[in-house]
Length: 237
Image (cartoon, rainbow, N blue to C red):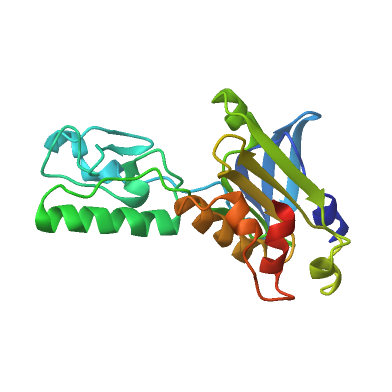
């Protein structure tokens, strides 16, 4: 948030956009804020709050397909729980997974395999990285501290501001850092959270490690090309 504001972007927190109106040649965003109802004028407005499956005009009820605002109710094969002739993937399927492009591709592959050869591929609980393409980018995969604590896991946390690290200094980025959660019993990575240059690419290293059950010890002693951001990984564990 500090970096975003330094870039000249005004950020309004704890505010809910209630409607958007046209006023002459501009847009007016009406919002409920801690200071009451406010209006923000702009010549361009972007809705970035996510996507909703476009299912309303399909009349799914006529085919006996159970669905709600999260999508079609499906089983582990991405098959409708109420109509076995119907499969769903991507934003249209209620899987509990993030509504992201790579997740849609993953689900589409499962549906295609099951349609062609019968139900044999299941949705796995795979780590899914997410990225906010801010300046600098912010990325995450796996659990945060709250979710790990709720599951009763014993874990250690490695966290540091990395603005003074060479990988940040060489590109003149003064806002960077990380937090990595490691299971005390298995030495497996539970979650990684990165902020800084190339965080959108580096999160893939942690995702692969989690998917392949690579221990933190193994990753720590992996030799990465220098001076890439990947070479910072061993210092994050």
